Image (cartoon, rainbow, N blue to C red):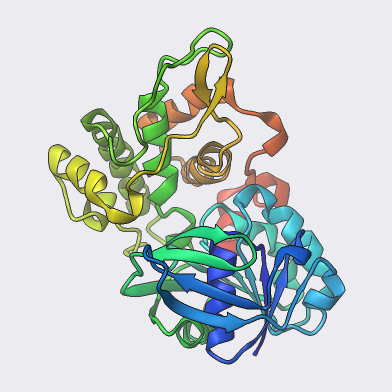
Length: 361
């Protein structure tokens, strides 16, 4: 296939390598095409090559990237999804497949007009593995590849076709999800990251609070975070039961995902995951000390286009989620407006009826 990867970061580089390795013609659409080498690699922590492949082209020219492509994999953060949709839209033809990796964050709504034009939108429930750039435009380190990936599509009838393309391109087991909403309200980073940020920075007051040090994000995870996470996770599970017209059986509880339903066991599990070790809590150093990095994707994506989406689904369904709402209430005064936030109304989805119509197609 002719495949275009939109975004040359961690996941974009990883996906481009895999799809090139499996015999596809791969184009990288990036703002920095001059930094990309033809030969890309995925390596392990010791630098051993796990996967490798050659790009056909790296470009920032949208026409060259999208005019005749069959498959587009969009890997930009959620706040850039609308821009991506507008960039791609002029080149959309009926039958083109556009994958959002990962598929949460409301990105499917940004491509609503593309669907009406005949595009097939699909998403992965989670990324293939933890991935970190080794050298931009050349190599990425990947750890903890998942045994199985899960895919859903809009319109729904194309899910099997999209699942096969991902399985073939990544050489990984792939299974279908019953409804796209399984991606939309998957409580992974929108709960995992937001509860952690609140418990670490709960006493933060802009221009008044400065920290000498902060704990590592995962490796020094706290029971306090786990307790709040469990409460928010339970609200998401209850929301799935409220949305009874959809099959949301694959919106797994984080307790199930991390195989621990006790506070201390869950905390220890998060602390012990190899791919999470050493990752810092997002901060910025100023003259007086450390402050939270409000430009980090942990804030701008996981609140603005993660938890915001879940809460809007709850509001459309008429379901109250007080613990999740408390997270948003804490974040709102800190939010940087330039990143925007997800809003279904912006895409003409402003009632329970229009919401159900969009996700049932």
